[in-house]
Length: 194
Ligand SMILES: *[C@@H]1O[C@H](CO)[C@@H](O)[C@H](O)[C@H]1NC(C)=O
Ligand SMILES: *[C@@H]1O[C@H](CO)[C@@H](O)[C@H](O)[C@H]1NC(C)=O
Ligand SMILES: *[C@@H]1O[C@H](CO)[C@@H](O)[C@H](O)[C@H]1NC(C)=O
Image (cartoon, rainbow, N blue to C red; front, top):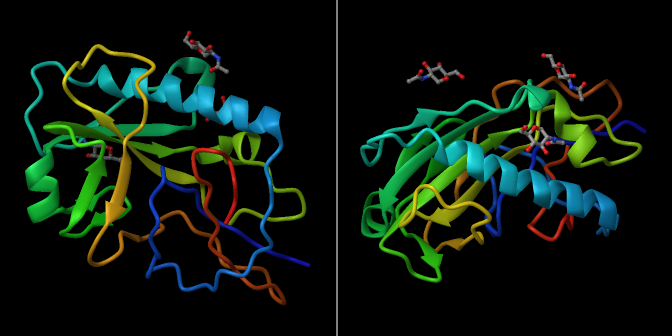
């Protein structure tokens, strides 16, 4: 019964989430392909809207973005970083995320953008998990090349934590209903839940 779930995931980040104190024992579920398609289309749309915050952008500043009115309820943000600075300094606090030292992207780019997604009340629409109750919105961080800030349909970069894992401190989290156990779940870019 019960259940829970929370969070979303991030693009190809293979990390453990210390603040999410739940065990990872969900069955491996293959997402339905139409859900995968709509979630990927959403990633592309949010990349486009997030990049619109960059009007004379400074590096290492978090800019809040705006979503189109048909997606009200989602939140997005973007930060532009030098790749070397991401690796050597991390980003202590980026919305709910903490990015430690030692994170690298692949393929290598000189500067990158980390797009933050908080799907809010749309979480279930884009990442449906029948039978589970969401305790938090689905959150994500996706990395892109920053060399062209008006680019759309950019491929995601793979990001990897070589030292400490990234952390997520959920802010809008409900407590698990009595008798149920909370779990962290994540989705990679292919829509799989691990
Ligand atoms: C960005 O949004 C957050 C809340 O979502 C707010 O606390 C913060 O002040 C905003 N930052 C800017 C620069 O507007
Ligand atoms: C929402 O609006 C944007 C901008 O008009 C549009 O590109 C997008 O296809 C619309 N629909 C969805 C489901 O995102
Ligand atoms: C989410 O909330 C906004 C209003 O804040 C509403 O316009 C939108 O339809 C809601 N989305 C869903 C999937 O219920």
